[in-house]
Length: 144
Image (cartoon, rainbow, N blue to C red):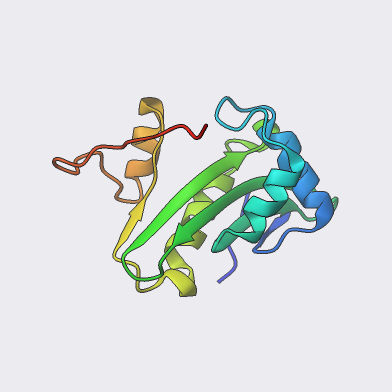
């Protein structure tokens, strides 16, 4: 079923080279992705299990993006949910998350996971995400 958005556009699962460049530009504007290199983003796209994006119907410009790393059974980690600032408030983030949750490749996944800043908790709770995961902690080790 096609989603209806407040602007003309389409959900896509594959990016063109120009859309990867658009994604690189989007990443440079956010605190968590600023400084990512185009070559690294190309590799990231190739090695992600599921890509969901939204492009403007007329220009084909990439204006929203999310990706998933998964084993297709137990865990699916949603990463890099991003919507171009001038397109926010038009339900594109909702479209990305809905598409991920309904994606046929992810239909058997037991747990969808993501991490976000505290101000985004109410947004992600709409899909049933919770920060109540008992004694589990998010950990990170920086690569040298």
